[in-house]
Amino acid sequence: MDEITLNPDADARWRGPRRLLLGRPEQLAGLRRRETAEIQGDTLHPGDWEVGPWVRDLDGRPTGAAACVAADNLTAVALHWAAAEAYDAMVTTQLQVNVLRPLPVFDPADPADRPRLRMLGTPLSTDALGGCARGVIVDDDGTAYVEATGWFQATPGPMSLALEAFREHAALPVAEADRADLPAVTAVVADSVPAPRPGERPAVSQEMTAGLRFRAEPLLDNPGGMTHGGIQCLRAVLAAQAALPDRLEYDVQAVQVVFARPGLGEQVALTRVRHAGRSLRIVEVELVGVDPETGAPQAGRPSILAQVSFRAAQG
Image (cartoon, rainbow, N blue to C red):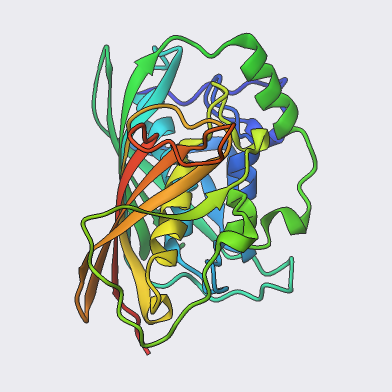
């Protein structure tokens, strides 16, 4: 496979595969594109993932699930590389993210303390309709922290107006407050976050319940004018955590998301706890739009369907 073509006229923040700009969602989530991608056999190293305040969850705890945006971007880049950039654009149809171990320690108050992990992508299959790729995020010693598998479908290129807006948003400065934690990155409505209730076991239910709400935020759109798939995945993680009253006692283990339709505007999470064991928790999440007149969730038309599993926290 040939080395990725670089656009010499592009700003450094989005150097990389042709048309695959590193937009504001990726910047907020800590992605950093390498000026020249490294290639070893069938593995591509297009960029790095910085660990910082943006990886902190509803309660300020770092979580490897914050790599969802990085995983979505990495697997998409690997597939574009394998297809020799034959696709005008792609949409994510399914993303699986596994958290393998705690993230490197960092000082949230020190902007200079940002551990950087390598993003390595390997294409698994590709055809005229799209394909699948695997990604792994590792340190310099090769220790893996997060792994992911992404499925994508080829689509026509984005509308020029949406792409131009994406470029404009990518060029805006990013303040520390913009990525103080995952709720800030994903535009969580603060008063929709329930306080944790330690020791209270969640009730298993067959009914979906409205939970976290998310503001309409065009800055989080992808080049197609829809909410970025990695941001959608992060929203599902936070919504699943919010559904567990004893969430402080559990860490995210894995996230599986199916993208059913575009995510647009204000959103609300519908959740249900499917399993509440002592060592394993499983929460299902649907992200839906909001009726502009009543403010009620538009149940029955989810943009994503997700399953988030949790394991008992260590220590």
